[in-house]
Image (cartoon, rainbow, N blue to C red):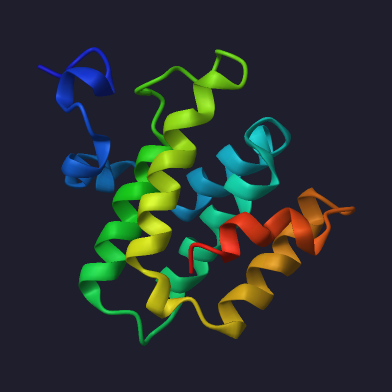
Length: 140
């Protein structure tokens, strides 16, 4: 029997990332971001893109890829610790888990990853500014 929400599974979703691995596919990630990019904001989308492109690197070790898959699976999961339907507050857990993941795999975010993330980010946020990304970059 599946728990009714993520809170039932753990107080801290970062503790149980394994359960979200099966939710992750590239197609689902692009769909979620495309659909909710404006709602979750430039910082969260940039963090997710950095993680995704770090995951795609051949040099990124398996343990780091596993963290990325779990976190991105959590992000695209239809069940949420704080429902995303709640304006602003609903994305707080997504931002928190993305920050945790980004700090954990920061060593695998190189300039190539940043460039790919910024290029893709520009498609969803054509007028983003570098200062919009400072808070995310400061975590690296």
